[in-house]
Image 1 (cartoon, rainbow, N blue to C red):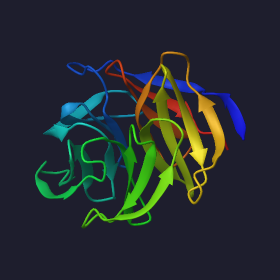
Image 2: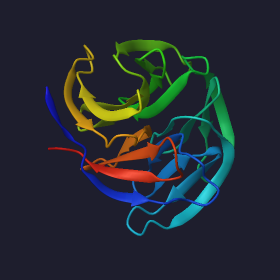
Image 3: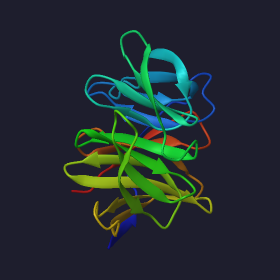
Image 4: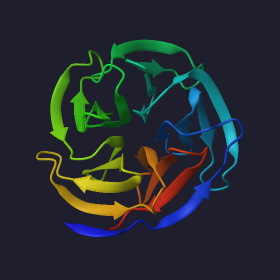
Length: 210
């Protein structure tokens, strides 16, 4: 396993009226983050806040190219980005103990926080298709270039880890600075991993090693 210190490229925020970040996503242009009762967008180049959607947003956020998927307590909501309307809901696999959320391979991937698991689920029914075990609390999950990454937070220490999507074996680990918790994780499809903060209204960009 490769292990190194996380290289933080940039910090965005703190954003007004945001106490902490619950989930992070990327639509190809804007970074979106969940802040409890809103989904918020900002420009990753300028850092400027762009718009927000009034919707329950209690944990992970995902984008499939057309719609947002947003954890809200024990449900996953499918949201129209243009209108903010909730189009459908499915049960969350953790029954409210869910954390990260991402879209890959035509399915949703959901972190289960204290259960230390990641579930691949059917986006129409919520049926669990596969489960991967972790050995730490899961706080975010993302895919990029066929790599599965997830964030952890336990004992006041967070890391970002690349894992084998079949076995869950840790292949690479990026250690965040002490006390800098990660809640929500999303790739920009390139060399940036966007990380939500557990203790402030900020999002951090971390370099993804090549």
